[in-house]
Amino acid sequence: MFESEISKRKTFAIISHPDAGKTTLTEKFLLFGGQIQTAGAVKSNKITKTAASDFMEIEKQRGISVATSVMTFPYKGKWVNILDTPGHKDFAEDTYRTLTAVDSVILVVDCVKGVEEQTKRLMEVCRMRKTPVIVFINKMDRDGKDPFDLLDELEENLDIQVHPLSWPINGGRDFKGVYLLPSKSLNLFESSKTKLSDDVISVQGVDDERLPQLVGDKNAAKLREDVELIEGVYGDIDINNYLKADVAPVFFGSALNNFGIQELLDTFVDIAPNPLARPTTVRDVEPTEAKFSGFIFKIHANLDPRHRDRIAFLRVCSGKFERNKAYKHTRLEKQVKFAAPYTFLADSKEVMDAAFPGDVVGLYDTGNFKIGDTLTEGEVFTFKGIPSFSPEIFKELINLDPMKSKQLEKGIQQLTDEGLANLFIQEPGSRKFVGTVGELQFEVLQYRLEHEYGAKCRFEARGIHKACWMTGPEADLKDFMKYRGSNIAYDKSGNPVFLAETAYILRMAMEKYPDIQFHTTTELIS
Ligand code: G4P
Image (cartoon, rainbow, N blue to C red):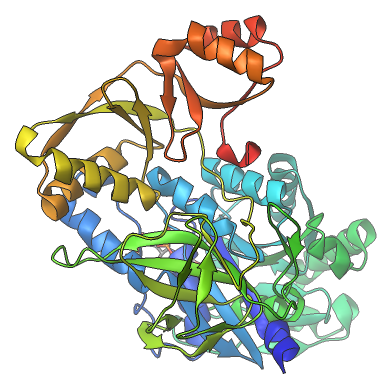
């Protein structure tokens, strides 16, 4: 019974460079999954460029992203969990963390733009974690790049072998549809935002004599040529290579026109991995283990500033999570219990009694959780691989109202627990440096500190190039910290961090202390 629950779960994220069509595809999946009845029900969670400093937009964004953080629906006997990732690049860290909680991803690429900057960055994380990837090349109703060139671009830039499972017949205004390689059938394109099933026509391969009649003489000839080439180069797909993250199946379609979604979703639920084992500080944890374990990968503040509670998102990794059962919070070494954990069914939150590996549970939190915290049935370990990246921008937090020091202290501690930014404290004097991946986070922090904690502050730029966590021989570390004392601060777990002012200073430090390793993510030191 328990194992059959696990084999139903498909937990994944849709990732893309902004504007490639992630929101549209998510919406179409929900539409096909019967969770929403009309297109347009899922709001884009992105902050538009023009609204980057509009605080109401930020608030709106927070609201939307809670509602669409996790979308769950049953489909063809499986249980699909889509974990949403923010589109804005300043929240990229949030996306990286969410990727630790999924078992596979679907990457959306715009056929006009090809591989874009964020596509590369996101794929690097997937490659690092060996996450299986399916690629959906979107917007085929637009005049895009040549499909062969797109495949080359994917292979070159994303460092993964691709394997087309569908093939476009023309593109843009002349887009005729796709040829489905495994089933040797045709899916003919019809521009429609409401149609819910594809008109798949069974043909006897590309040699079928009806082909010219169905797609036109020229297109039929070109398709025959293309397919011969593709079959020669790629052969049959070996699903194990996809599961090992060596090969990415590729589909072509148009999310806006509901085209190519059915075959993508059907293939996805068929081949995507079920919940996978996950590494901890002690051992690998298998999903089939009887005892429950899971970790927090995201924390979201309550939208109502009068209630300071937050929602912590727990990914169940093994066993069965149950309501009102006491679990061990391994960092705090204490028992915790949840009276009203909830699941995310479409846009309604429902209190749940039990959750299984692959599921995400929302837990009300009054300040007990930090990103990466682990819950178990008693065993002490911590799930590994939840990265804290070296921030790109550093500023010092300046208190503007000495009467509200306590509120500011509490606020910055809690907001950085949410993973919005990194906090580094330097002694003596308790100077606080905040590091983020984007400028937008400073605006969000300042706004939330004032509105939720009543603390006024300002951020002053400081010339810091990188924050590096350090490992190495104790004597060297001690000596280095003495020598570079004024550039050492401590992260929230008490680890010393070297705040290097320039790349040159960092290089000099590396040369002077060859036995010390300088890391830009904490994942490497845990
Ligand atoms: P994102 O979440 O990856 O940022 O992208 P999103 O789905 O919001 O899509 C970005 C834009 O691309 C949207 O247009 C959307 O309608 C359009 N789009 C998505 N899929 C397709 C497709 O298959 N073909 C074409 N031609 N366009 C597509 P927008 O004008 O920015 O927004 P909207 O006003 O249409 O919502």
